[in-house]
Length: 217
Ligand code: SF4
Ligand code: SF4
Ligand code: SF4
Image 1 (cartoon, protein in one colour):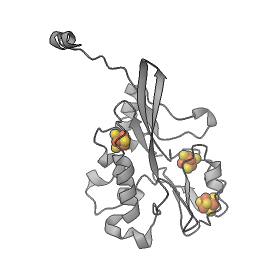
Image 2 (cartoon, protein in one colour):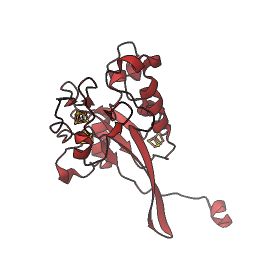
Image 3 (cartoon, rainbow, N blue to C red):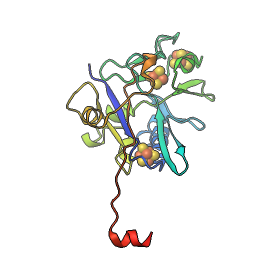
């Protein structure tokens, strides 16, 4: 079965927030604003975010580092947010493994948000509907977009190519190759949710200075 996912490279994420703003922009207005009415997979309303980037200082002085950590729904293969839903609104799409919410069925009970161990769901209190990352399913599904644009808005906006998108069950996909070659890992695999999104770890880079640069230090 196909399982689409993001792979996020923490080594090249610079915390610019372009993925946050592009996500917000696309999922608020949708395709030239048409989703405001149909919203097949929901809208990202004021006060909620599908995608957030948190910044941490790690290590001990003088060996410190700044890590930018993008965080959104991980589109788990065994998502605990799905079976707890009393109305069937929360579901996993068979064709590509995306975890989505059917807004016609959602009653805003919040059970799915409590069940998600990653804090990936945020209730739209105005509409009393659950909101979360859809991996821009409306872009992936849209035949009027050119094939290269049928991917999440955040992936297209990232200036450092820190975000990769593809099928983690295809061993030759860009995401599988990156996971294999760079040691991609899942968040809290011990919880048994099998997150589809993976992270590539920070990697040490040796910076070689020229002699004249060394003299100036
Ligand atoms: Fe990081 Fe890319 Fe998001 Fe910028 S757009 S915060 S580099 S993942
Ligand atoms: Fe569900 Fe949370 Fe997994 Fe997303 S990250 S599929 S909301 S359990
Ligand atoms: Fe289902 Fe909506 Fe309740 Fe979540 S908030 S469990 S999607 S009805």
